[in-house]
Image 1 (tube, rainbow, N blue to C red):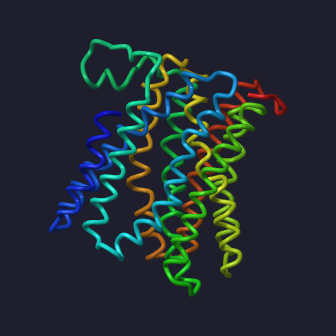
Image 2 (cartoon, rainbow, N blue to C red):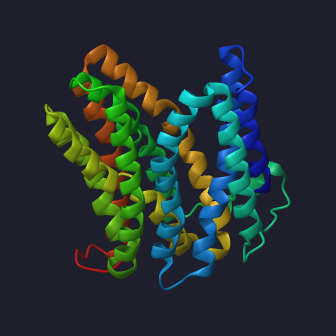
Image 3 (cartoon, rainbow, N blue to C red):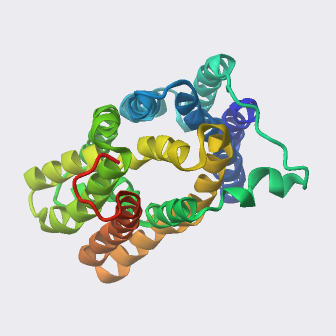
Amino acid sequence: MAIGTVLSPLGLILASFATQLWHIYLAQGLLFGIGCGLAFAPSLALPSQYFTRNRSLATGIAVAGSGVGGVSLSPMITQLIQTIGYRDAIRVLGAFGFGILVIATSLAFSKFRPASSGHGYFSSMVDIKLLSHDFNVLLVFCFLVPFGYLGPYFLAPQYATYLGYDATTGANLVSIMSGLNSVSRITMGFLADRFGKLNTMVVTTILAGVIPMVVWQFSYTYGVFVVFCVLYGFTSSVFVSLLPPTLAQVVGVENIQRAIGMSYMMTFFGSLVGPPLIGVLMQNYGWTAAIQFSGAPTIAGGLVILYLRMRHSKGKLFMVI
C-alpha cells in the first residue's frame, strides 16, 4: 500500500506535465494504474482479517468509499477544470489523493504476515498451492466479469447524447450509478452475512448481466434509461465487496492477501480489453451489439458462481452458503 500511495499521485502529477499522448499513457495509464492497484487490492483483505460474523458487511462498508468518491469527485473535477484548467486540476487531484492515501496507509495493519515461498519474486505473488478447484472457479469468474460490466459506465454519457441530452446529463447518471454502488455494497453485504455470500453473488451477478440486455436494450426514452442506471448501479459492482470474504472462505483468512492479488491479476485482461471492445462494437455494429456484449460476460460469470454454489450445497437450492 505504501508504494501505491506514492505511485498513484505521482502518476497524476506527471500526467499534468504531458506534452504528447504517450506521456499520458505512461504517467496516468501505467504509473497511476499500477499505483491504484497496489493501494487498493491489499486493503480489500483487511476487513476479512478482523471480522468473522459480519465479514461481508464490513467489507461492503470498506469498499463503499469508492462509490462515494465517484459521486463527489466527478463534479469537483469538472469545476476545477473550468476554474483553474486541466493541468492544475490534475495536480490538485493528485495532492488530494496523496493526502487520503497517507491517512489510509498509516491506519492499515495486517494481522497476517504474507508467507514467503522462497522461490523468487513471481512465486511470492502466485502461490500454486492455493490453486484448488474452488479457487480456480473464482479465478475464472474474475477473468470473465470485467469484459462486460464496465461498459455501461463508459458509455452512459454517450448514450445520453444519443437520446438527445448533453454529456453532462450522462455524467450525472454515472455519478448516480457510483452512489448506488456504495449503497448496494453495504446492503448486499448485510444480506450476504445472513443468506450466504455465494447465494448473493449468484443473484446480483446474473442480474447485472440481464439488466443491460433487457432494460438498457429498450431504453428508448430518458426515463427508462434512468431506471436502467439505477438498477445497474445497485447490482453491477456487488461482487467487488463479496469476493474478498468469499476468498477468505475458500482459501483461509491467512492466505487472503495473496488470493486477492491473484484474483485481480485475472481481471487485468478483461478490464483492459472489455471497454474498448464494447466501444468498437458500438461504432461498427450499433448499440444493440454493444449492449448485448456488455451483459453476456457478466451472465457467464454469474453461471460460474452458480456452479460453485451448487457444488458447495451438493445440489440443494435452499441453503445458506
